[in-house]
Image 1 (cartoon, rainbow, N blue to C red):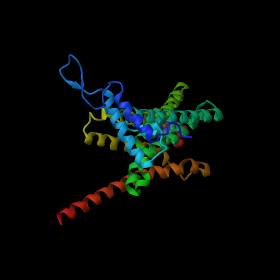
Image 2: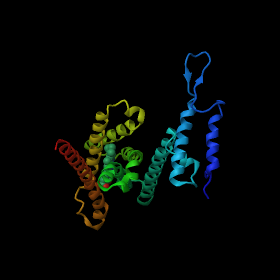
Image 3: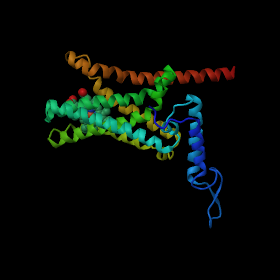
Image 4: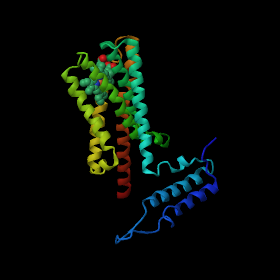
Length: 282
Ligand code: HEM
């Protein structure tokens, strides 16, 4: 059963709602007494967008469409719950994974190290999707567009799972088994990049940057984090028996595949531009 399914008569209801609240048609001017200018009631643009979205959705899929879906994406507020859902799910998954490793292996140094390794792998998968989605869509077409559209959510989910990793590091420090200074410096820089990128993925803040600066920030930050993962996963992935290979090899392959895909997509873009330029010149 699809709740709130909208038939054509419900559409009339939605349009009719525009007349409510201000007692006039949505979109018409609204004069504030005492103020020398016309204001549009703040709800009118939301209703207009909702109506347009509803019309498109109705044409696309005729009937049987939920109100929530029809409005999804047109209200700015809608973007937050989806990102928040990814952030929450990733955090809970990382926490659950860490807890199950700690329950199995104990809460001593060995258990914490194993939990760190497990959470790092989960976080890496989310990071990899954020890092490679755009390249996959460029190289292999529309099939990967849904992944590309979710790239920011994957990135935020990764930053959320990383919090559990950092919590485990803090725990390690508390039991007197703190990692070396070199680890703090090298991975600390990666952590700073992750949360800087997460911060600037907020629309208002990103718009304060010039597009070139945002592009540079993303390229440097994402590649530094990719490098940090690669340093760990490419440590002899084929040594140390079957277990070691299983724990490292798939992640080592992805750690190499990500940059290769991005370089291939970049090369494809340059080749296309070069072809277009030479077509125009010729
Ligand atoms: C974005 C930042 C980070 C990334 C990409 C990252 C990545 C990783 C990876 C891939 C592993 C698994 C290593 C393995 O299985 O051999 C790992 C484990 C670990 N990480 Fe992180 N990490 C980050 C932040 C940090 C920070 C800030 C610290 C502490 C200063 C830290 C300390 C550790 C420790 C102690 C382990 C366990 C290593 C072992 O048992 O071999 N990590 N991390």
